[in-house]
Image (cartoon, rainbow, N blue to C red; front, top):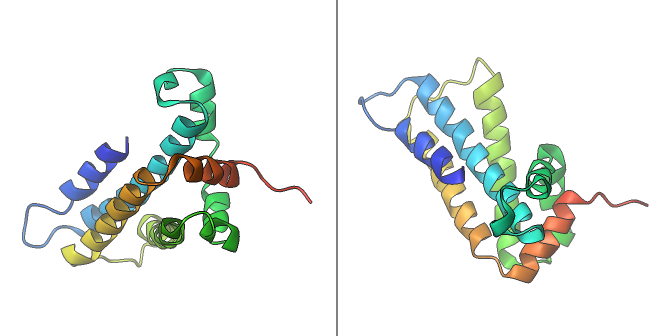
Length: 152
């Protein structure tokens, strides 16, 4: 799914000299969702296994990722201690989530420059590559951090 979302995000950036703001806004939204689904896929693959993608357990873990909780946890010192890449992933996740909210829900948001939207797509691609490159033990610890709420 992440690859298709990146592909769709990029498709909104091609064509006419001045793409419509709606296409650029859609590209920003798709970039965020590509990153979100990359995280969800990593969680399910790590905890259940990529070979079990057709099972209810894999789908349940995949769907267990919460947007707000992920943003909060990815911005914590605990997340930063997992791996050097996690801090960057967290910052991009937060930045893209805010950009998506603006693009999807704020009618005053007018994107007019292709480069502005493309920058968000590049950020998503970089963060997705960073997720894919995490060591297995870091993926496991990150999965637990993002899915299990701490009880006091």
